[in-house]
Length: 271
Image (cartoon, rainbow, N blue to C red; front, side):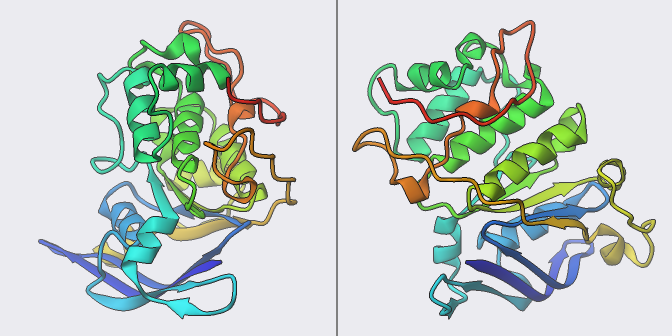
């Protein structure tokens, strides 16, 4: 599948927020877009995923069979926006256990009593269940919220919005994004220009009018080697081609000693 944005313009109350000539992201691909903090990132994330109609331009979804659609409802079903400020980010004071319960409910998973706790335990995150989400380290937070978004069985595209705002090394969340791309997701990552440069991108300083300065620039585009899909553990789990083993993204992470994501491992069977 592929998302194609062409000649996109989005206006705010004080003028243009986004002027994007063309952007594409395909399943199995990881694209880094860098720009100044602000509403340009928000507008792009919402337009790409069908959650906002642009003032002008078009967004096409190219299906696996080559057919195309501009239907926003279908794009919303196939996409997830992760941790977008003021839109999909969790409230700072909410504990990880509550965030997990809400994420699983949205995915129509883990509705049985104790489901969120078991999910966290399976992902080696049980020690963080009562910890406020704003106290979780940046890479662990990104891994947690992305894993919950990936539980939605129809999702094929993930937008990771400004993970660098939570601190930590850009290489950590960039590794997470590439891991999802290797499992077949199309991944768009949004970040600041300095973070993109830390990852080796060569991007020019922001220039032009306010809209051009706010519009993110493509910094990196990677198609990592494909990783084998995990097998479904039980009838309640999404099918193998719709699910990702996210447990490997978490190490042992007690509240006072959170670790960064580790190496892949096989999906464990639900208890």
